[in-house]
Image 1: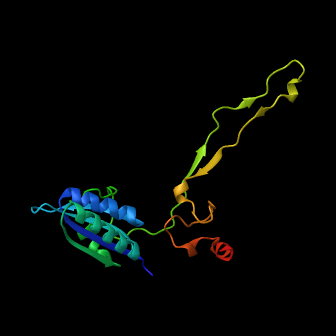
Image 2: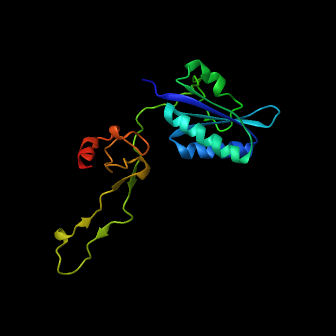
Length: 188
């Protein structure tokens, strides 16, 4: 089942557009494709993508926030857009779009929903601790104590239910995707 959707919020004025984009991104787990200015009229179109429910919630929140700043002209959510709409949605006029590679790549309004690789950072020890030399210690007994690099995982990419770095679920995903969901369900 394809879970992607395209959300559009059309407002009057760039300030209202920025307010709509900010509220939409904060309200749900969606990706901001960018915004596009119209030729005349001072209108701005904010383009979002993500899961259908998340995009609907984001568009509603963005429209409510933008209506406090200026007029919201229209909003629309397209669930499961056809892949050929990519050329219309992501154009050279879209501000904030990701730069394409030099090789021709087919643009698609759908977000890639592959399992993201966890960001793992190696923390190198600042220095190694060496045993102090003393006349009582034989040269063969001297040893260097080295600290192992510590693996740290970005807290935003750890499941907020179980806290297990091996869990592929991240904050905002459904609870059933947690590898410890059955255990947590029994505890409640």
